[in-house]
Length: 206
Image (cartoon, rainbow, N blue to C red):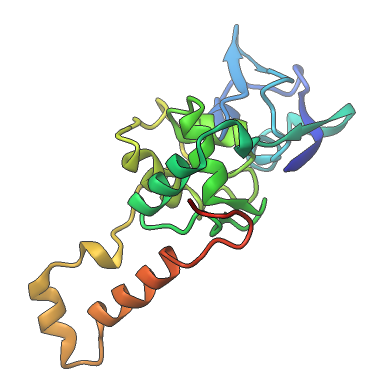
């Protein structure tokens, strides 16, 4: 769970409608309309990306009157499906994939099972990607792909860094080429698969 205590507020006199804020928001909570940026207070997750990147210093993070709790209730979904989705994405369900918010793979999987169809949906529902906004896009995309979803980056968005290859994607000829140089890809795969299949501490598997 993430508690959001802040929200973005735009100074209309300073705003130049450059759309930088719109492009960096991980939940698409800010849009330029009629040449001024407008914040959707309910959508905002308080990450401060817009404030930090605005070249005109037109955005300030202010304290909310009431904090917002962002969390996914995993008990609402079939946990066997959560496990299956996570392991299809080569992740252990209890593995933390967003260190800034402490979001686990199981939470992202649950969000997808509840209807999330993009990283922006996942961020809104779980809070993932509202910290550094860099590292966790890749495992989120892996989980979406495992669910058969192939989302497109937001038009003009700057917060997508794409899916990077994993050790499972390395061609055999590359493995063979570098085996003599101290790279043990197959051993790495075996170790990672032990992590993926490790018994879950928080829940009992059926």
